[in-house]
Image (cartoon, rainbow, N blue to C red):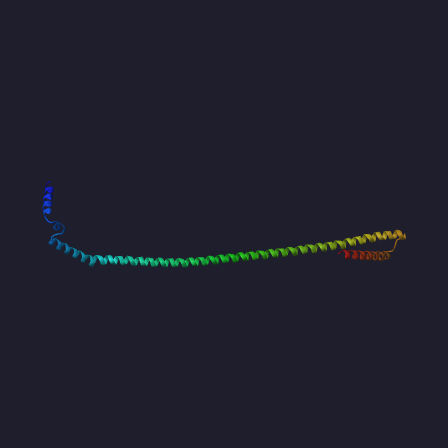
Amino acid sequence: MLHFAQALELAQESSEKSGAALILPELPELLWGALCFIVVLLLLTRIAFPRLRESVEKREQAIRDEKEAAEKDRQEAHKEKEEYDRQLAEARSEANRITEEARGSAEQVRKDLIAKAEKDAEGIVERAREQAGAERTRTLQELQSTVAGLSIELAEKVVGRSLDGSAQREMVDAYIKEVSDMGSSNGGSSN
């Protein structure tokens, strides 16, 4: 309680002083306050502010360096992207070229296969023609020999006697020649 009483007593003394005296400190207190302010201001301007300024400048320089490094990295990334795009375009071009070569090769192989097939077909047709010709010749020879035999038999019956070998031969040869001429004139007109 004692403190409360003392505070009341001090408040009463203060109320007796004028209003300006309550706001303004006393002169010795004002001088000490100004002196302390000047000392603190000198300490701040001589020690603290330069260090703060140096710290801020270092931070600004670090930010500038980081910004320059980021810009350099961005430019490098841009160059690498351009290089990648160029390589990609080259790869696509190469792939297109290879595809076109493959198409050309496939087309050439197709043409070669068609030409070979046509040549083989021509060979087969030619062999068939040769076989047909050989078969025709064989058939004609058989026919000639059969006709010759029949002719001799017929001639013997007509003449009533047997012909000698040379006479038979002459007759058969003449008849074969006549049949051949007829066959070649008929065969030549049908071809």
